[in-house]
Length: 492
Image 1 (cartoon, one colour):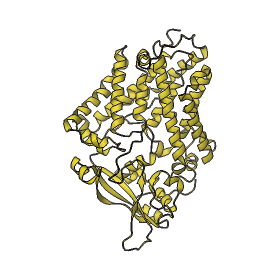
Image 2 (cartoon, helix red, strand yellow):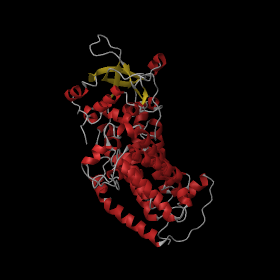
Image 3 (cartoon, helix red, strand yellow):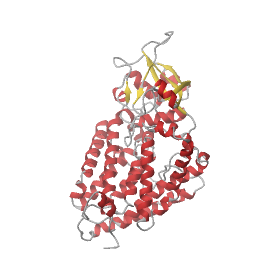
Image 4 (tube, one colour):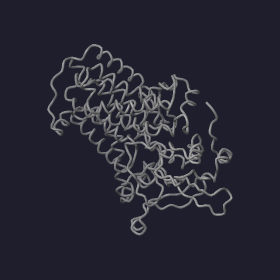
């Protein structure tokens, strides 16, 4: 069936599937290590409360059947084990039907997590991983050639990721059109990396070149993905180079990494084989009829569902990172339609001193990823996703982003909750919880070359007012309500 399989894309499929398995492993690992504090029965936004008010049809998930922290842990750790097995080649070593089931299980398990993840899983790369994972189910394994139709669907997904991101920029902040957004972006992005300071300090003319190159990569290059080889390969390599630049300049969880994985499917497999000194695999027989029918049905489904993201691309009010169905198939993607000109951070502090102490000694909680201590160099963490750190960036922009969880977070710190403290880098109160906590807002900017040499500080920060005044466990709810934060919800 020469029309069904693509000659020359064996190694392209292999590279994509191995990369995708590694990202699944990362995602399941992050879920296993962070869920108790964020989503558990005693978490900041508990899953039992969510499933009690949101029906299964709106958010399909295994956890609608029943939930316990033990079950969530079992799902997450099983996902880690299964993705590790796929990563080392088990899905290629088994019969085709078993390989399909392994990929389908990964998709279904992660869908169950995302659909109850609430604000902690509201990022575009969650849907992107699910959509890529759904397509991987129908790419087959080493026993059949890669289906042509599915390879085109992967390119269509990559096109939407890149072109959608380019359009949202041109339609959004005027600094993208003026080529000035990167004067600010490296400094104000959610999670700067260890090289972000150096990227920010590049000469401004080079920032103009960066921005213009980004527009070319996202608005022009994606069309070349649908051209014959070798042009499609060069287009894919241009996407990969752009994404590597973004990997070096910041921490965007697995967004850049999964985009690279998608681009690998458009690279001529012979090139990958030559680079890795791999010989072409032996010819296989025709795919079984059931697999052919399955691929045709999946293709028809994705084509129909693609109407909504295609319409979104040409819409005057383009939506960014939108899911048009609860299965996260054929969504809309984009990033940084607007860029902050200034950076603010919320710093949470605690004290052992009781209320009324004239000059209490406040000590700061440090997070693992987000900026805090000005002397601490920004840390690399991508593709791992530190969800609380990311949400603290949104919280600094407006308390509205933090209403569901910020007051409960302070309550957990006042209780000395171990699961919550494990998400932080430092706990200044190792022996007993603090008597009071507060949150203050600071303006942050990268230091200059001279300031860095003289002070050793990567950041310069200045106070920007109170975010939430000092509270105790007894006063937290009333104070949070007066400050515009919703109190912790009561019951399911």
